[in-house]
Amino acid sequence: MNLRSILSVGPTLWGIGIFLVILGGSAPWIPGFLLTLVTGLLIWATLAYSLNLITGLVGYVSFGHVVFMAFGGYALAFGVGALNLHPVVGVALGAAVGLALALGIGLVTLRFRGVYFAIATLVIAVAALYIVLDIEELGDGKGIILNPAVEPLSVFYTILVTLAIEVGVTYAITHGRIGYGIRSIKGDEDAANTLGINAARIKLFVYALSGLFAGAAGGVYAWNVSGAFPYSSFSLTFSLQMLAMIVIGGMGTLLGPLIGTVAVYLPSQVFLTIPLLSGLQFIVIGLVVIIIALFVPGGIVGTLRKYIPEFRGMLE
Amino acid sequence: MTRVLEVSQVHKYFGGVRAVQGVSLAVQEGNVIGLIGPNGSGKSTLLNLIAGVMKPTKGRISLDGQRIDGWPAHRIVEQGIAKTHQIPKPFLAMTCRENVAVAAMFGSNKQKDQSEALETAGRVLTLVGLEGKADSISSNLTVQERKRLEFARVLGTGARILLLDEIFAGLSPEELRDAIGMFTQVQKEVGFGALVVEHVMRAVLTVSGHVVVIEEGTKIADGSPREVVENPAVIEAYLGAEAVHAPT
Image 1: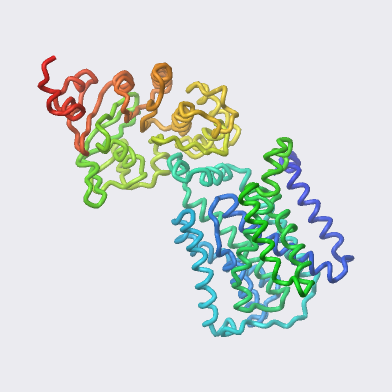
Image 2: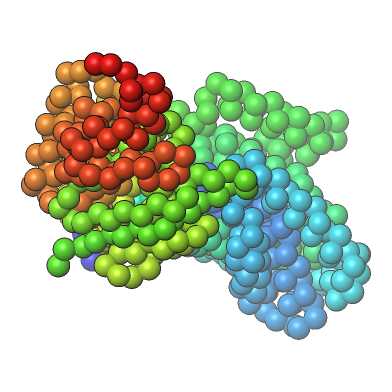
C-alpha cells in the first residue's frame, strides 16, 4: 500500500482510527470504573462488527453468533486455566477456535438461505450449550473460574487492537474486488453465481472472519470476567443484542456497528445500575429494534446516508 | 480458435416429470441459434442445464470437446458461457456500471483491476444503448432497460457463447424493433455465439441463422427459420393438428 492509497481511505475509517488512537493514548489516565465501561463497549463493538460481516455485508442473518463468542471464551479459560497460557495467547486461541468453528458450521449452514440459515444458527447455539455442559474439561457444567488478578489496561489494549484490526479488515474486504462479490451475493445470489462469482467460497471466507473476531471478543470477555460459565456464556440475549446493535446502527455500513454499540450498550449499563429497571433494557431494545425495522430499516447510519447524499461517499 | 458448445442426448427429470428428454444441439461462436417451443417445453430448463444452474440427469454437455456438465455455474462462466435470467436479476443496490463491472471482474475475463472493469462496463453499456443510465441505480430501471442490463452483464463477462432467455419478451413493437436492431449490431461487432430462447417469433426468426424446436422436452424440428415455420410438426405443436390440414 502506498501513501496515496493510505490517505484516500475515506473520512469514516480515519475518524474511527483517530477515535481509537485517542482512546488508547488516554487510557492510563481514565479512572477505573470508566475504563471498565469502555472495555465493555469495545468488546461489544468487536462483536457487532463481527456479526456485521456476515449479516450486514453478505445478508445472512445469524441468530447464533453467541456460539463463537462462548467458545472463544471457553478457549481462553481453558488455555489460561489448564495450560497456563498468557491471556493474550488465550485470546488468540479463542480467535482460532472461532475461525475453526465458523468454517465447520458454515460449510453446512451456509447452504441454507434466508430464514433457514437463521434457524440453523439458532439451533446450533442452543445445542452447543448442552454439549459444553457435558464436557468434563470445560468445567462439567459449572464452568471454569480463573484467578481474578486481571490487569484492566492489558484487557483494554487487547480488545482495542482487535477492534482496530477488525474495522480495517471490514474496510479492506468491502473496497476490493471481493467487495463487489459480497455486494452481489447480498443483492442476488443466483445472479452472482451465473456471473462467475464463487458465492459459496466468498460466504465461507466472510463467515470464517466473522467467527474469528467473535471468538477473539469472547476470549477478551472471559478474561475480563475471569472465567467462562455455560448458562451466561451461551445466553441467547447475547446474539440478540449483537443483532440489535447492527440493526440500530446500520447494517452493512462501516460506522453503523460502532454507533449501534454506543446506542445500545451505554443505556443498558444505566438500566443495570438502577435495581428497579435492571432487566427491562431488553424490552426497550426490542421496541427500538421493531420501530427501526419498520420505519427506518437502514438504521441510524443507513438513514443518514439516504437523506443526506453528501454523506454517501463519507460513510463507506 | 472458434469455440463450440455441444449438447448431446441431454435428459433432465424432476421426479416423474421429464422436462428434457434427449435433446442434442450445437452452438458455434459467431452463430445465433434460436430455441423455440410451446410453454413448458423445456427451453429454459435446457439453458439452466448448460449454464450449470442445474445438473442434467443424463447426457453430455461439452465446450470445445471438454465435458462441462455438472460443473457449478461460476466455473461455466469462467469457461466462457454466460446466461441471462428470464426475469432480470439486477443487483438493485448497484448502478448499471457496477452491475456490469461485476461481470467483468468475475466472468471469463477476470479483470482484477477495478477501474479497468468499470471502463469495460462503460463500453458494454454503450453497446447496448444504456450509456445514459450507466450511473443510475439499477432499481430505477424500466423492465425494458433491465432486460438490456441483463444482456450487458453477459457481454461484460467476456463469454463467447451466450444463453439468452427471452430477452425480447414484453416489449412494445417499437421497443422490439430497436432491441432487434441493437442485438444484430452487437452480435456482428462482438462475434459471440448465442442460443436464444424466445417466444416472440418475429425476433427469433430475424436474429437466428438456425432454429431448433422442442416440444415436451424432445426436439421435433431443426433447420433454417423458413424451414422450421413451414414444418407441419411445428405448426401442430403450436396450433394443434387441425391447423396443419386446414384449407388456406
